[in-house]
Amino acid sequence: MPEHYPAPQGCGLAFDFGEVRIGVAQGDVQVGTAHPIATVTGRSNEAKFAALEQLIREWQPVYLAVGLPVHADGTPHEMTRLAQKFGRRLHGRFGLPVYWVDERLSSVYAESLLAEAGVFGRKRKAVLDRVAAQAILQGFFDGGAADYFNGRDNDESGTHQEDAADVP
Image 1: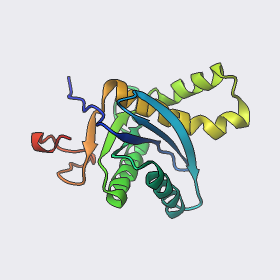
Image 2: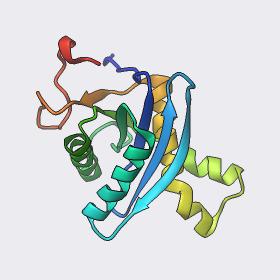
Image 3: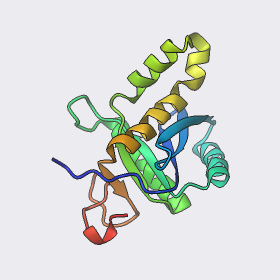
Image 4: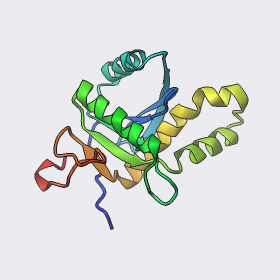
């Protein structure tokens, strides 16, 4: 069974990456609860990263968690590569460790939560990504991350090569 990395102490932000929208959630492992906080949109990547920078300044996280989309059998696809690129950019820009969290069921979970709350149509679309980010962060709190990225010793997949000295 692969090793899972637990969420570090302190505030963390999680991201449900999409090419159009990025859902953002905040939480702390000590409290054990994640909260949806924002959906970031923009015409350009720079506009999106400017909005993300404001959130990072406001919440002052000690780590970031990025949902890693994969097929149901765990194999990567094109969005996996794009999410990893996004995570590496987050690390490069903000210098925070980035944890990869399996997001296979985050959208299903978010859809069911919103349905239970009676949120449908346009209202659902407006909050779905941030609730998916909440599910990603809650999954990190509950089960850990499969891997993390700290800017060095990376293989082709963009994930950290195991090195006991580097484990946070």
